[in-house]
Length: 231
Picture 1 (cartoon, one colour):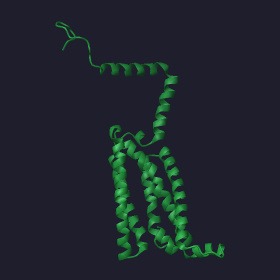
Picture 2 (cartoon, one colour):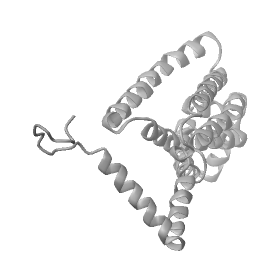
Picture 3 (spheres, one colour):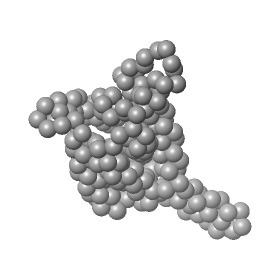
Picture 4 (cartoon, one colour):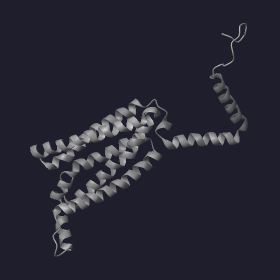
């Protein structure tokens, strides 16, 4: 993206230099500063992604953010100046905004005893595969053109969307509260209200729960010959 900005922001570079008469600001510096601003947009995208994860099903939020990166990835390659900055900002917003959803999905879909290892494997795969993109970009730039890099990344995003679709289908049997915080909250609130307005029913539920827990406890009484309770 910095190289693309350096090549495709001629009007922006000219305008900024006209504002600072007497000094020449290189396109590299302007591209770098612009990238920094895009990361600020991406930070806000992460906050919005977290809010989406709190209000909606994590799986569909994750799918939606990845879907929304695809059109921007295909349009960035041929855009210049302000349209390029605008498209790149939207792409960064949704690309970084999916991270809270992704991390929460890892937490919800992994057992507690291996959660730390699951995060470790996730980041190994993320950064390990990410390093291959450097080689891929070099091949695309030398064999075709730098403007094709983002359409290729858009194609990768399409493959990711297909994988997310498989994830959604394969997790249909899991209780919705696993992926939807508000449903879990509403269920707890319903139980609280029911307990307040139907005390006898609440006491019966507590009694049944205690009986079930007691039934699962092993019988620790000493076994004596002739004991009618002995096996």
